[in-house]
Image 1 (cartoon, one colour):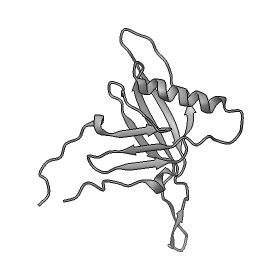
Image 2 (cartoon, one colour; image 1 turned 120 degrees about the horizontal axis):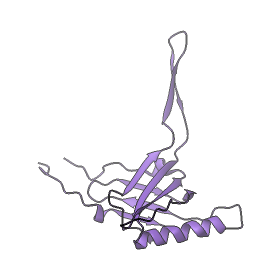
Image 3 (spheres, one colour; image 1 turned 60 degrees about the vertical axis):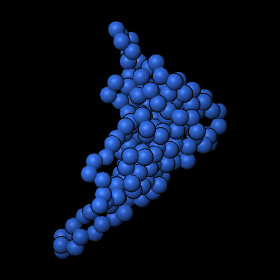
Image 4 (tube, helix red, strand yellow; image 1 turned 180 degrees about the vertical axis):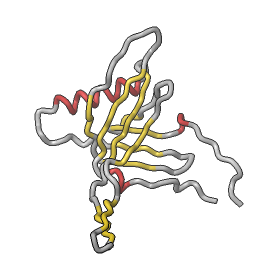
Length: 150
């Protein structure tokens, strides 16, 4: 018989970018992974024949929300600058790995592409910074809920 309850703790989610552990999430922040394209695009012809066309885009976008006072913010900012200032057109490998031990979710990519710079706002309390990273081929490496065994 399986467990009647499970426990989730964001602090136990493992996230590394370029081999550097990332943490110090924002107030409501964390990590969101979104596929860029669907698996298939489905069309129905005039004769009623349904055709599912494989999209072949296994890339994903990772949105990481960090507190501006965290070491994770400084680390991602430094990695972003290295990529931004790289004089060659070839991307430097910066591996991405996310593992959630509570349910087994795993996402990996050999490269990250920093899509934009985080916005900055200064106010009464420390704010959040949001990084958007493009993850080539992440969908084909994804493992969903492998630890959710009944």
